[in-house]
Amino acid sequence: VDCSPIFLAMVNNKGLKTLTLDSASMEESLCTAMQNGLGTNATLEHLSFLQVDMWDDTADLWHRAFSFLRTNHALKSLKITLDPRVSESLVTAFRNDIVAMLQESESLESISVHSYHWIKTEEYIALVTVLQHNTTLKALAFFFREGLQQLTDAEDKQMAALLKKNYALESVPNIALKNCGSDVGAILRRTGAGRR
Image 1 (cartoon, helix red, strand yellow):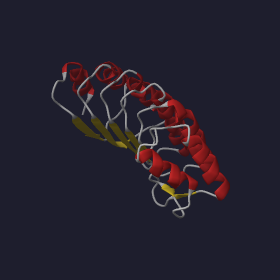
Image 2 (cartoon, rainbow, N blue to C red):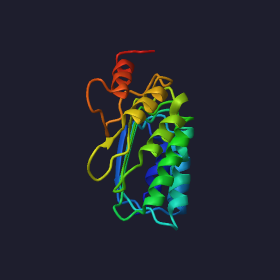
Image 3 (cartoon, rainbow, N blue to C red):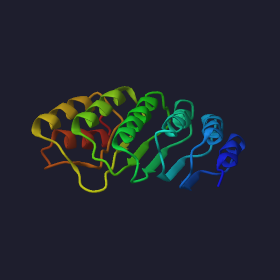
Image 4 (cartoon, helix red, strand yellow):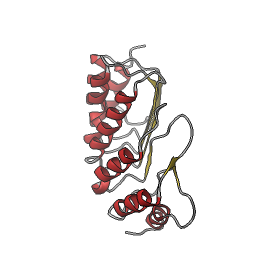
């Protein structure tokens, strides 16, 4: 199914607030339609992509398609589930690109990227570092097939130091907070309670 007309119609959308697409195949026309249709849309608040099939020949198109995050001022939540066959290197590059675009986002409050590849703690810390100046994102989740990210005491303190500089982020649901004494847990709870 060609989803391009759906996204092109978003330019004039005045009522639709939630859109979920399953197994969209990326091509140039869809990439352009997403950029143009969602870049200026002022109504759509929740967008989900299920089973994104990103391959070497379509990865660049997916990256370009999501550039609408830089100019869209209405979207509040974005959920992306990547196909299990997407390679680890493509997953990593995609996460990095999405987070880089979020530096300019003025409305997105929640993002989750589901993949079948574990995210390394140092990558997670690097992504949180990039988001230090984002003022709207409250929940950041990079879910994996199973399990929670375990932080060492040193990593917990390092991430907590970064989160102290971010007054919006309240939830990183796939990081295991070992106990109530976790520095990351304490900062997230304080932010949720209005630390600003």
